[in-house]
Every structure is written in C-alpha cells, then in structure tokens.
Length: 150
Length: 150
DNA sequence: CAGAATCCGGCGAGATACTG
DNA sequence: CAGTATCTCGCCGGATTCTG
Image 1 (cartoon, helix red, strand yellow):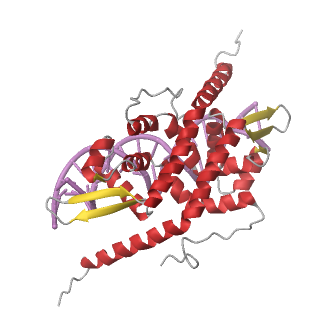
Image 2 (image 1 turned 180 degrees about the vertical axis):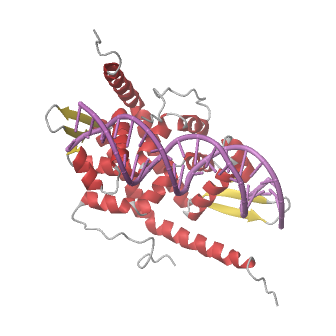
Image 3 (image 1 turned 120 degrees about the horizontal axis):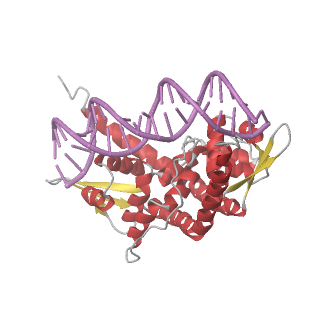
C-alpha cells in the first residue's frame, strides 16, 4: 500500500493578517489534499458516476473503462478515507461491494460542478488564448532557423 | 477572432442524453486542462498572489519560496497560455517582466476561492473521516500477526 | 534579472500474477 | 467478484549550468 497521504490533516498555523499567507500555508494542508482529489483523473469520474446511483466495483470498472483495476482501487480508497464515498461489503459469495456518495461527497460534487460549469462557460476564451499564445510563439521561433543566411 | 464556432478547443462529441457521459468526455478535454491548472501545486499560489497585485518574476520566486526557477517558469507559461495571466516584457536592462491576472484569471480565482471555502467548511468532517478510516484499518491489520497460534 | 537547456532521481501509474 | 502484491517504466519536478 502506498499511502501517500500523511495522517490527520493538522490545522496549519498561519497568521490571519495576511490573506495570501493563509492560502500559502493552507495549500500545504487540507486544501491541497482535497484539490488533489478533485483534480485526480479518476476521482472526478467516480464522483460523477456515484452521484447518480450506488455502484459496485466492477460496475465502476466497466463504466469508466480505461482505468486500471489498481488505480480504481487506490482512487476508491482515497475517496473513502476522505469521507467522500462509503464502502459497503456484503458477506456473500461471490463478494459484493457497493460504493456510494456520502452527504459530504454530494456536497463536494456540487462544488465540482460549479468548476466544470466555469470551464464550460469560458472554454472559448481559453481556446482563444491558446491560439493567440501558440501564434505568438510560432512567430518568434523562426529566428532560430536560417536567419537570412544569404 | 474568437468566433468559437469552428475549431475552438474541440467540442467533444457526446450524447446529450446522458449527463455523466458528458462529464466523461469533457474530462478528456477542457475540464481536464483547467483542473490540472487549478490543482497544480504552484498555480494556486501564483493566482492567489497575482490577485492582489502585479508582480515580477523574482518577486513571485521569493514570495512563493520553495518553487524552483524552472517550475515557476513552466507554471507561468501554462497560465499565460490558458489566458489566466498576462506577461509584459519591458525592453530595459536589466530585464523586467511583469505578470498580472487577466479578467479570466480573476474570474477563475473566484471559483477557486469557493473551492477553498468548501474545504475549510468541511475540514473537520474530512479529518474525522480520516481518523475513522485509519482506526478501521488499524483494527483489521492485527489479523495478520499472531492469529492465536496456540 | 529572467529565462532556456540539460541531466537525473523518485514515485506514480500500468501490467501482471495471485488470493479469499 | 473484489481485491492485494510486485515489478517495471515514464515523466515530473529539482538542481545545475549557461545566456542575453
């Protein structure tokens, strides 16, 4: 098991005087952890799927398709540890394990959706920025190759 | 210039029937990109700092303290390419480069703050979940060692 | 001062094999 | 079915060096 996350979360000591300072310190603590979950490639999908209904391990595996069995396990453990999802094992054979969003997870899902919404609303601006940037870069590159070697 | 109708960032083909399906596909496109920025260790700090005022490269370097020169450069380039920050070079010696948040960046900063706020509001729940999880795990581990070898 | 280029070590993620 | 354990490999991020 590669825990990766340290124990507890610990409330970082920070001076309330400086708002940014708080961010800085916080960033090393709770926020960083949650952000890592939110940004995680698979976490998002899992949360989105579980927001609809309870699902079994193999269901998630098939639904996400592309995720390795290992990464799904790791992702689910992380989410469970953070209290975002709950894991229910039924002592039957063959084994059956259900995963579902906790109230906390549902709450998080709403916040995530707002982020996704923001991205959707600004995707044109971002795309335009990309195009502009790439064009700018492309306009400077040519310096390197044959600068008028006649 | 920014018509957005044609290529843009590539509007993922997806069936509007399924909401989760949209998430899935989107996750491979724009959302993933922005999420990577948001979750990035240094991006957050840069955005938070620039939200207060324009800053020079070395100012950011010193303010963040812990970031390598390379990663700061990479981070700034990414943010610039996404249109989140703007980069202004003054043709003076010694060189001077100013970075500042664009309107898009300010907009993103607000969304990020809401995420940070959420984390702060729920940090106790998360910490409690961690404690509960670790306890549960700790309670199951002992099975492995000395299983009543009488 | 602001950065580009290069080298390199660690770990995160995938594939595989095994188990209850 | 629902995982664990192990190995390997890619690449991300840090340190260092060089430039305009």
